[in-house]
Image (tube, rainbow, N blue to C red; front, side):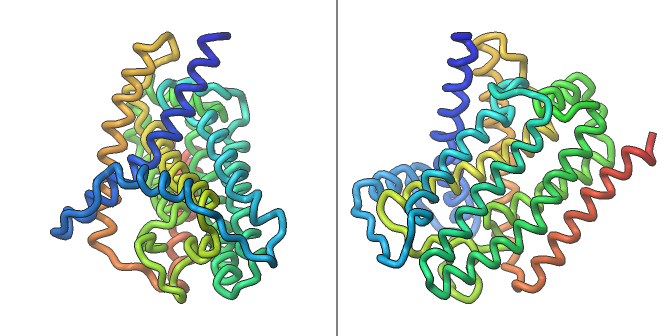
Length: 314
């Protein structure tokens, strides 16, 4: 029991403390790729500390939804960190059906963030909320279809057991259908976390932004929680990509050595994914808004083909 509680605490700390570093490393790498020095990888920690000591300014037209949303976002993603296999093959909240809970927790944060954007009553907030919901409506089905394609190959809907099955039979990861699911999930990760070519997190252009339009009215500690939650969402999506599709390096939770080896393996895989995202974002431009549904429809098609391949390819 003590070991399980300690494992849960370690996993939450890895997700909560590692997420800002991942965002900082991505920003630094993108700057270096375009010939700039860029900020330090530790800059997101300084930004969060600065925001936490600032006074929060809240519009008089808002309700409790606006104030509660940052806490709900952070709490939902911390709980998600207990469901996703991060450092070992068996997450602290390992049970049959946690795929469904995973999608629900992601949607819970999106739902309340969209409500907060509407709650302010500004034109930008409503515009960003409508765009975010439209993207989520197209992206979330792809998430669950891609993961279910893996679940059917592993004969289980438990995320931990999926990782164990693919780790024990590595040739399954070389299946073309597995690669299709990886490509679909990668595209959805870019959309769900507001990365290029779906959204540009580095700009505040009112006519093009999606995520930033909903958080323009936040300040102080509320903005710090929203930014922290966004970093954790990116960390969790990349962790799912790294550990579900390439589970090598993870071990069963037998002690601190296994957790340390799993953490080192995760760090290496996240470094490769971060490099891939940075190269992609420096090579492509933001899509026009009406082209985003076409991209997400393509990702759903890839996930659906991966699912159908389970029945057609034996």
